[in-house]
Image (cartoon, rainbow, N blue to C red; front, side, top):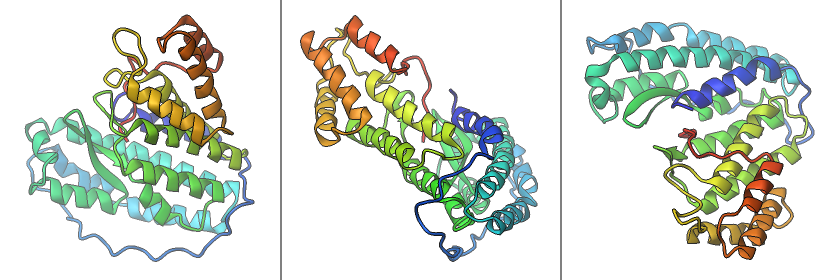
Length: 302
């Protein structure tokens, strides 16, 4: 999965999941939150590069966003409202792909885009005004969606489940998850993310975009139990890394009623029987629970 792979994957899910019934039993619909102060974004860029095409690409996106917001509010807190959001988000992500293409073409100033320079500041401001974050991975800049933007734009319009989903992703997105296939959060934080998404699934069993929430749970659980290329669960000799073992023990003790912790406890039991070394029994258990390895996979960056 490349730097934009997560967005593309979730965009594909958007097209078919928007019409299902959503859980609306929790959280009353609130009035729309005040809009943040408008960002002073440039009307044009003058880099002499393909970046200069970005303002014209974004022209009209605000009116489309406002139309989607009003349509969602007209059917607030219903599956139809979620569908309106997901439809607009699909259009939004296609725009993000076009912006990222322009960033990829601006080879002579890619390094400047990542720094606080006369190029990056107006570009970041312009993108933020329209709901994008100027992000980077492995030295390459790209346009990422900003989930805080979604929570503001569609505040009070979506089902409680979708609102909760967006708030969770906005919180997670504020901290980089991985870079160069190396974990950027602690093992304990990773465990908490998996438990949080398990609890989300239990709270909203009829969530209209269930495949997306499942994607995050599977990503975090698989990473927790199999590691990443540059953040290994097992050492080269096949022994469970001490910090990972400590985290497993913390999780099993702190969240014993969750399915995540119960699976980890099973893994710990098998590991203990084998001197905390990887075994065929561990691999078999993970296969039975549909936990796929994250080794050799480029994980999401945020």
